[in-house]
Image 1 (cartoon, rainbow, N blue to C red):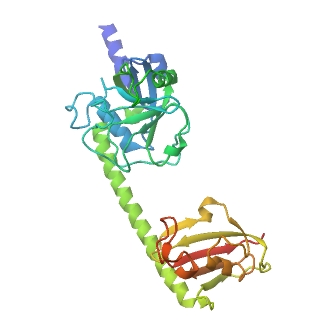
Image 2 (spheres, helix red, strand yellow):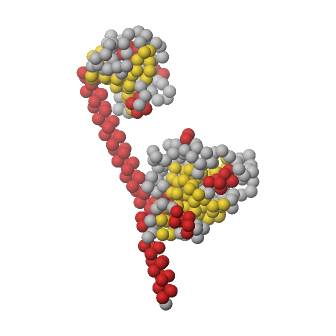
Image 3 (cartoon, rainbow, N blue to C red):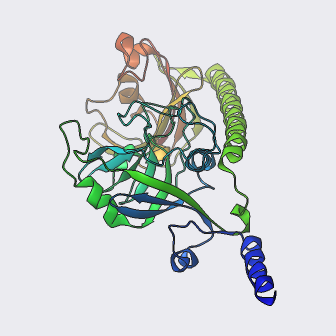
Length: 359
């Protein structure tokens, strides 16, 4: 009886400490992990331990965990059946990535639903072992994922990063280097035998992916609506500002309109002078198209040298260095009837906040 009580005490302690160890994970490995959610992915090439970024990508992680454990409803497998067990890596490319998660094994299948992207500025495709969602465009996430073999920065902002391989990077290399067909499918199937979820810490002890997905999706929709409302308010305020400044503007013979917001003390540039300018470009609907401030990199130009729109060529000779001005450039002094680069529409009036740096 004493032994039974001791065993029960140990079990109670483990549960109260938020511990859930997958059968495929050793106690030593589990002990070495920080608190959080982890996926133990066992393949016929070996096992990988993947840290899941639940705080940064809550909806995506909940979807993955819910599918892995069968708590997330989908149209490919009945609820309660682990989604990823038995699925193959259907696309592998050496020095790029390995891709899996399609229940059909062809690259076109999924769980029967899509959900939105979650981009976090701290999560990048900047190393080997990054776990990210495969998609066919914005807001088309489902069940397919990929794991990078090398940094792939061109995928940032296009695919949701939601995890990192912390053990078993050699497995990624092993899979990426298998013999494959012309469409990058392994000749000998690379099988995901099992995906188990490890929970460490009280916060995750009762984590349910299916339930967490619905909560995270609702929170995401709320944040998106708040962001859209904020963006609309900012655009409305900018439109009002543009109208107010336009009413005060002076007009040159060419049609260029301007307001000096802050007059600088430097010398006025002359033809041939090198000059640095910070600017923000908007349209008449308040939409920001470009800003050197956002890049923290002013534009380098030479006064009088072609390559700039006519309205800028004129403006650069008008104001002292150090000045901050507001410009309204009509289409004929801007990009005209052709527009520019698919960004500036034809016949667009351009609204610039410009700062002529005193350098």
